[in-house]
Length: 271
Image (cartoon, rainbow, N blue to C red):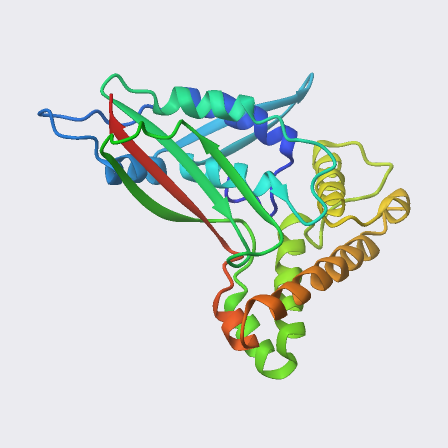
């Protein structure tokens, strides 16, 4: 699944994840040892699955990836921003699937994933399943980072900070996010009804809704250059203002960039 160059379509992802994680079993504890959060996280990071997703009669796509990558995709797909979302993502299917995947007779497991372009950014993506450990219950946590599907931006942002200050950093971050959501080769032509084109249009519309901009005229004629430009400019404007308010210098802002990764936290405690 991580071979895909863009964030997967939300509706496709829900189906993919609900079909994939129910078959996953985390390793059991042995010799009455306490639950091992590191082992749980490692299992998520290294165990893979292959999933066939039907779209319509006679049409299907095939995906393979680690369970950690699937959870990371859920966080990115569940993007929120300064203008909110046009609709809520139906996460119940994801939560049920992950609960089934991590359910154990000897321990409780909670998984949380969060994507942020930098700490405190005005948009982020989150996914969580599992309850908080009861008060005074010993719990163990482990964290790992997973690729987000967006290009690495910190190095380029650092260079841009020296040349163009906060505006340069914001431009780089906005370009990386749009690259992940609406790749340059995305097929947005309205006459196309294949799954890839439909998914590309929905991704563009979702990011536009998060940013509070209108791209429908450009989508109506399949003008992907205009779609991407409008999204980049709107996102750059939001980010530049926030970066100026949040960081003492453009260089400090550039060093905080984390567009290309999702942080997963696995918490376990005894049943």
